[in-house]
Length: 453
Image 1 (cartoon, rainbow, N blue to C red):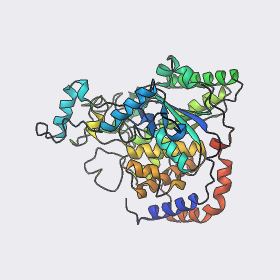
Image 2 (image 1 turned 90 degrees about the horizontal axis):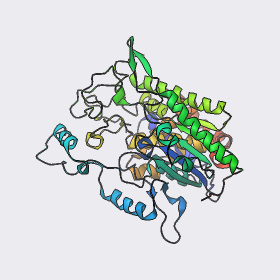
Image 3 (image 1 turned 60 degrees about the vertical axis):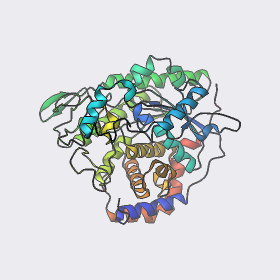
Image 4 (image 1 turned 90 degrees about the vertical axis):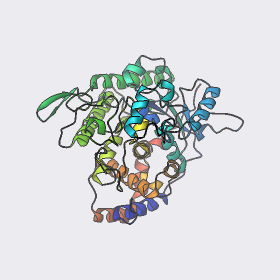
């Protein structure tokens, strides 16, 4: 990203102004928050997958210093997994720079036919997007104790409602629970593209049932313990490039479950739409808001939505991120790819343009952080520790922070602000932030509860 652009300069100025006004709440008891979902929450690929993951060990261990992966059966198992995670690179080393597999396609073909031991694994303990969220809270002087309970490809209804994990997820110890649905489940069952009806693999009824089952269970357990309901945030995931475009670029193949498909089917239902990524984002937006409204209609008032997927469209509208990563040369400029673009990572069942990249994960975490804590994401600024540790340039971090802020302000995807608008925002920031922050500190003004076993 060019640090001399007006967007970058003004975003940096805004972030510096915000940082000077932040209060510190590190001395308050920790707020217990649980993130529930699948690989869209735990991050899928390094370095996000294990970021801030760890385990309690030894005297003086700080419980809130890392994310607690509830899928780890014991301290010993987490310790062993952590050692593995540090030694396994993100890309399968058996075929990289191997003269027998000189092209990307030959490497993908090798992985597709290899045994499971040769394929990419997902060792824990997971930190993921909750880990980025945790780092943001630490930088902001907040006291959150972050846990994660995730399984690849999980749906809220199919995996969680009928599993032994439900008692853990709905335990009365949680102050806040974040729920992430499987990527395509919230979509309408069918959509119309160019006059034709296309099936999407969506199952919104299943999505709503899963949300309501978990929210109801949280309510039941909180009432039995004589405690207030946990706040619930639905984490709206991003649209999928692999659902929206075809690829003729051999360096960016849609390899996996969508390979060789020409659109007009349930693996690529939005192909052919004039603006497919935005169309899918809007469908997800509507589905998540509907699910939250349905849950509130049952009497659970503290259910909201983090519009993380909407922020991707804001970043694309602002020219920060590419819209179609499959185009030749799309990744050669200054724009970032919010989706993962490493075909060797994605091989062999999930295409690139599906999971978030480090940039997409960072933007999702920014939206969750802003929604849950009420803190202006621009307060993290150019020197944000999470961005630096994940390898994100400070200028890019500031621009993604600005995209998150604009999305929060607009309640959905925001258009590119005019330079004069940014100037007015900077001028009025010092006098308005404190009052705004006080109105929106939902995450830390609640009375934290003591954790129960």
